[in-house]
Image (tube, rainbow, N blue to C red):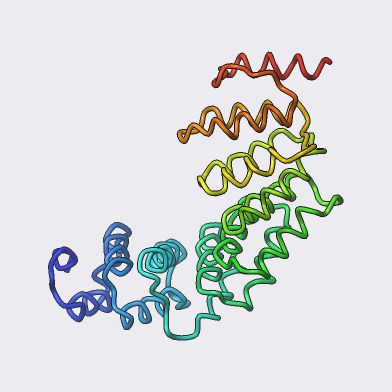
Length: 277
């Protein structure tokens, strides 16, 4: 059965082996699940989804199967034809890996009934679940998700970490709006760790980088010097070498031009000098 995964053998033979439990070992299940993600027909995806949700399926097996369904969605935009709403059942799972995969699937499958649970998890105190929920919301995309994340980014009562996460999520599908919000938020920001996450999100995509560069280059835009230092360090170490962004950060932060890459020790020394001003 395992050899059949790497041949042109019909899916009927492979699925028959699956039903007989011939892929029950962890590595065997991973190999089979990879085949499902890459080559599984609609009927295979549907049966696989049903088995992933079955009560007798073990937690580790379920995670492997959910990851395969996520890869099928990413690689081939293949989704189950049946009741995709059932994925919401797994959003109450205590297991972090199950929740992470289910959150992404709920978003990529556009399961509207999952939105409330994802927003609640995103706002929660569990960082891993919050970030997993953010991935689900990013997969949802669209105006409703944009409005939720924009509203949170603007909320001065929200924690810096929450506002930063909201901007990071928004940057992936509404980079222009995210860049404008980032400039507003960073103007009065003190949390350098959260600011680093914001810069990283914009550096992950050239289009987003351009939007942030333009927003920071606007008339009268300023950001605190410690935040600018973090931004310069993050941008100058990026593989894309975004020199225009570095220049925009330096200007907004009132920094003198400096060499493009600082060592950790140099950055710590500079931060200390700024803190004692």
